[in-house]
Amino acid sequence: MVQISDPHIFAPGQLMEGRVDTAEGLRLAVQVAESLEPDLIVMSGDLVNDGEADQYANLRDLLGAVTRPLLLVAGNHDDRDSVRALASSLETAVEPLTSRHGELEYDIGGGPEKNLRIIVVDTVREGFHSGLLTDERLRALDAQLGSEEPTLIVQHHPPFTSGIDFMDHYGLEGGASELDVLARHPEVVAVLTGHLHRHAVHIRSGLPVVTAPSSAAQVSLDLHGGPTAYTEEPGAILVHRLDGSSLTTHVQPLRGASTWRPAWAL
Ligand SMILES: [Fe+2]
Ligand SMILES: [Fe+2]
View: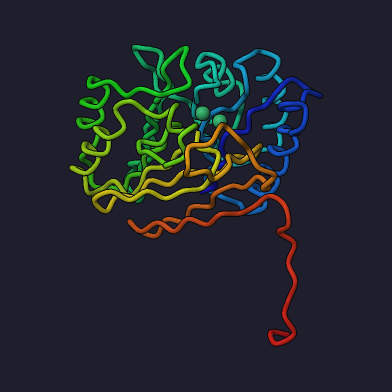
């Protein structure tokens, strides 16, 4: 399974902050992902930058190159209805659950092989960059869990404090309570998120939370409270390999991945 995150697509020809070609980032991400022939491509939110229709139209064109099953998750820069419409218009996209409150969620797998279940939790708090999981949602998640198959939780906002202050400022209210809920369910293998624009691993009580880099721009690793800043680090994707209930995650940068062979191995 490949995870592409935070592509932040603009209208055609527009750059992020006048400098980052986010469309090119996603084009590369899709190309690398497709070359790996994954069983699933998960896009963990902030699919476009401002929730606008022309941005979703551009995203739709860029995702035309995807041939693998595709899971579209909403982030704080997204418009849920537009993501839902996009999911139903793309042949390879998985259909989201019907939800009473408009959340964009999924619960897939759990078939007779019982080899993997993926639950997408919608952490978007409309009108805010920070996320929210209400007590009601967490009770429902608790009830949703409890099956036998290894389960991955996918969501946009990470449920932990990263130490990068300017990102933690837009964190997830209810995140610590979510980890308490998940800790009661041994079938949960890991939580996979976006939003941080940087790869990080957080482990609490043996449960790993893995954040994905962005295909567009990476957040600066500033653990001393400095202002919001990004880096020139290349975009990257995560490649998750599940073997039974054990998960291995690889980070694949989108540039500089051409190979060479050492003389001793020839
Ligand atoms: Fe983002
Ligand atoms: Fe985000």
